[in-house]
Image (cartoon, rainbow, N blue to C red; front, side, top):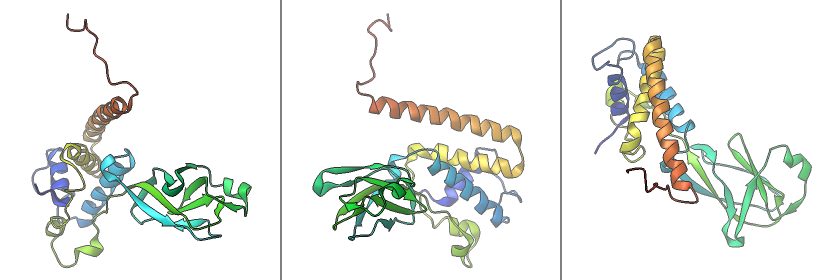
Length: 224
């Protein structure tokens, strides 16, 4: 089933009851639409580590080089490991690089800063390091719109494979929240924020249950 940036935006407005043309948040105010979508998508991927946004990249080290660029769609790094050595690297603080200094060897730690990853100690050989990370969602922007109408352009950006159906409600609520902020509607902003918090709690509970050491238990006498 198709699901585009246009669907995300208009469904979000519909959650505020704005399922009709509106000058402030409608197609005629392109800057406002881009602002709302950028804010909504950023909140959506920053406030939860979504498994469907988890991917990985491979960094091939060079002798004597500690820092390497990461993909441009990086949100945050999930870990790093050298599979050939069965070695999982531990995250550490950037200032630790000053403690290790120029020492070289098998990397045991890593730090991430400004889109690059630094291995500590500095690699003393060539290693293939797998770096799982959560990616961002690209924002629609005016530079790519060209001569198309705004909604026509948004309809060409597919999120069908990027945002699963069960996550679309919360994504659309972030659109509604950012639209309410633009409209300076405190009540609508509060209501959408409360609904987002409720959904986040359900998601966090489900994650907690799925990662618990023992499956959720049901007491025998609960239904007595």
